[in-house]
Image 1 (tube, helix red, strand yellow):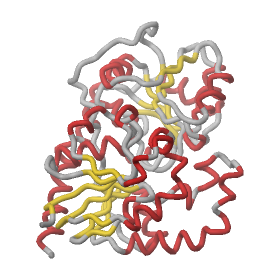
Image 2 (cartoon, one colour; image 1 turned 45 degrees about the vertical axis):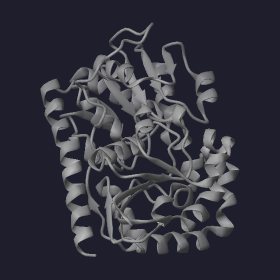
Image 3 (cartoon, helix red, strand yellow; image 1 turned 60 degrees about the vertical axis):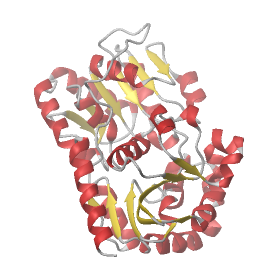
Image 4 (tube, one colour; image 1 turned 135 degrees about the horizontal axis):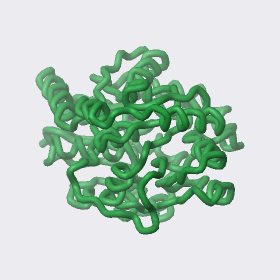
Length: 361
């Protein structure tokens, strides 16, 4: 007998915005199994340990669990062979999960069409690896479009990604903003050696996140920068940073709440499809300094909840930080903005869509 609802996600090996969305979906549908490629409990959110996780057979390969990017050539074929027996499956996808076959209706929540396929140079930092896909790009794009067309409903996180889905797939995707699920009312724990008044960058340390530009900006600023995250470019970032930059990895939610609440502002220079960091920060009344691009246009209100810069380079970032310090947004305005990104609103709309999909069967 088919399950009423199932969830599908690319891989559960990180602590990022997409994984927070899956946690919100699992709270909306607490009895739903979460189907995925690989699951590494130690490197993702601990709340998943209480969930029914159904990993693929490749989960037995420990090296792929710990370094999920090694599985990049395998995920497409793996998800194309995955069959999810459910009346409605919600596929949380940034390139893979939407390929799963579903016995009932399929809802795709698209964080972004596959960056490795459509934005390879930005995703891989212009490395030679980006060129490896070039001979296969057209074939891969056709199979990706067929997978997208298999969905009954497409949802996404921002107007920018909705436009990209329309351009690539010819699909109209409804924008359902992900929630700030960190929860400002949860426990807080101070991080040793850090005092208030710093600026905060919360990001996976990947080339397209442009954390190097943020670090470079603070070489010309007297303020402390705290960088929370880990990833392939961590070593080079640490090597290039000035003494006023502190790097933190493996931060708990309690520590992250304290970091958000105690910061002067968050800084983000990434080519972001949604822009979760400013939303999380706004729940603590903390403003943002962000790149005028993509999802940040949905999550930051200029001169009300933050300021923009137009290029992910040190000089414009530093100039934007100085503008914010000269005229900081009011905390009560920033807090009010956060209310529009509640988990209740997100869950309510997704349940409506899932209920409608089920009734059309």
